[in-house]
Image (tube, rainbow, N blue to C red):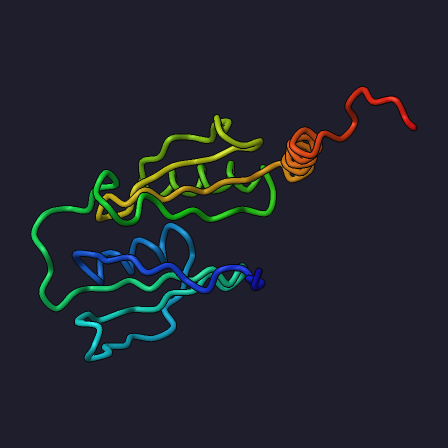
Length: 159
């Protein structure tokens, strides 16, 4: 299996490039790196980067946008997620969002993995998740699943 080394970027199609750029810079602290318009892409892309984590977004504005808003129930992107280093960082994000008037879910326990999350929507109604995973608990769960699948540590008499 070929190796992966993290993610490089996520590209989001937006309806207003300036509005989305302003939102991602104010809400997540991203900075604009460059704007490109490859003729073959049919869109203008603005590349944003989070300077501390190197997470990046390409915000794309199609030259001929399709009608209708983004919707996570349609084929395509459901949400974009950013991991935070510590659980307390989610509380800091919640305070920041409150201070700039951005609605969000509040910090809550994840129902699907050992950790916490905070949900919000960008200007095009794309879900954005900020999350922290308890890595020790997550790894123990993976180890347990592996042991169960491999039949390890079952009641067997040594020969």
